[in-house]
Image 1: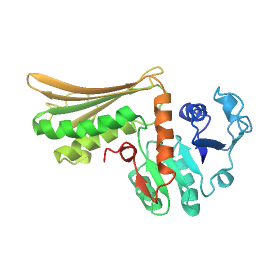
Image 2: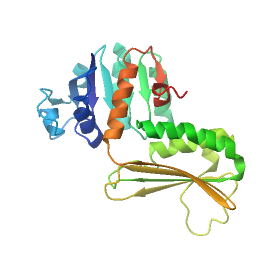
Image 3: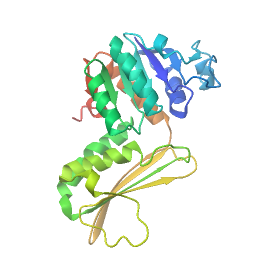
Length: 267
């Protein structure tokens, strides 16, 4: 049985990870972290998650929680996740990171830390989304550059980053498959009179509405037809269970940077 630490444990995703952990015979929750000053510090994290009393208080003592042999599961903010990864790398721990919004510099540092720690980083832990990543590459390669690519993502009104990490990864996959530089061809929304779309641009549009868990659509359009790939998440448990599957995968891996594609054998 592997010992698990959940960071961001009182958040929307963290609380679902805590709740779903009760169904995992191979994983055991031993610590739960939140930011200093969080109003729920000291309370039982199971009760906060609606999963009943677990005997694990919500803490802000990351140094005590992140010890050798433990697996961190985190959905929070880039700065906190990166600090936790630095601590884990120092002791040889392992991590499953679903946090999004990392800068290029932060992602580069995570790659360096993976030289000392097994880190699984994925913008989306859903099994369905990760299968969609694989299918998108096949679709883009087969359709080629004659099709216009547009990506639309919708999330709840409280989401902090835009576009979503999932939408960005979808755009990266399509750009790679078509041999394009995403930094040069990405168009994030349109207004005014931008003129006709160019052949190579990849449009990315973010919508924020109500309590939408997550919806992503990639459209390939050409004169006479349009092909769309859509994923809709109806519950955060989809992502939580994917993260737990990733934790079971990472527990005995050597240092390195992994993804959900590795977990599913899609690499």
